[in-house]
Amino acid sequence: MTDKIPVIIDCDPGHDDAMALVLAFANQKLDIRAVTVTGGNQTLAKTLRNAKNVLHCLGKQPLVAAGADKPLCRDLQVAPNVHGETGLDGTNLAEAPWSEVKESAWELTHRLIEESEKPITLITLGPLTNIAILLSAYPKIRRRIKRISLMGGSVLAGGNWTSAAEFNIVVDPEAADIVFTSGIPITMCGLDVTHKAMILPPELAELKQHGGRASKLVSELVDFYWIFHSNQGFAGAPLHDPCAVAALAAPELFTMRDMHIDIETRGTYTTGMTLADHRMWTKAPPNASVCLDLNRPAFIRLLIDACKSYG
Ligand code: RIB
Ligand code: CA
Image (cartoon, rainbow, N blue to C red; front, side, top):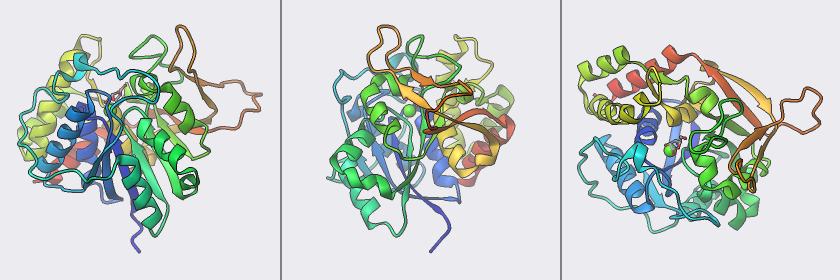
């Protein structure tokens, strides 16, 4: 029995999802059992293709399953303004020669959790539709999910898709509500911490100088990703999704606070908001460990070392 953390990663690649996969598959603390995919940054067909091609580029071939092509009860919103028409613009990856499994994301996740010798941790990097379907279709599965480390929301930093809401939550707020009321322990990596998790030009230069396959991939991803973010006043490219991996693999790099989070699903201006109860006298039990700060240089070093480990 290894002391590695068994995980399943759900993602919507997406540039920062791809960087999160680079980090996760190089991390010695994680035992990645599968990668599942959802629509989000782009349509499911594109995010599925991107996930397989990134994994193939890294020389990895985990179980991959396709999940939801749209939110539970809303139309899908995609983000070509950030990730381009392919969802991974700026890269030119070879097509993975292998296919995803026939099972859906929730069927595969359910089977692997039931078969696992110990509870599994979920790392979610996109809208939470697949997880909501899993919890709804298999209500007892939640007792075998150790934790969900998710990229999503914010408690002080406002929104990035609307003035109040972060993309992963607002694309499917009903799914987020199911997850945040599930009782499963949550580590929430919201914009409060991911906006600080920037890779800066000298660090990017180190990756470019290294030139290995993962370093080249991440360099290309950051170069394209930077186009959108440099116009937003950032000093560097904020690496949202890798935070959800690092918060699980290296929690000592993060400052977290246990808070009660409610998901707004009906607000005229606030739909998708992750509303934190900041009242000192609140009786609302915490349902998330919210990441508020991080050791940025050490976090970026983790990613750079991960890139170099692929040779
Ligand atoms: O708001 C940032 C999040 O939305 C990231 O997960 C990014 O990949 C997009 O999915
Ligand atoms: Ca994502």
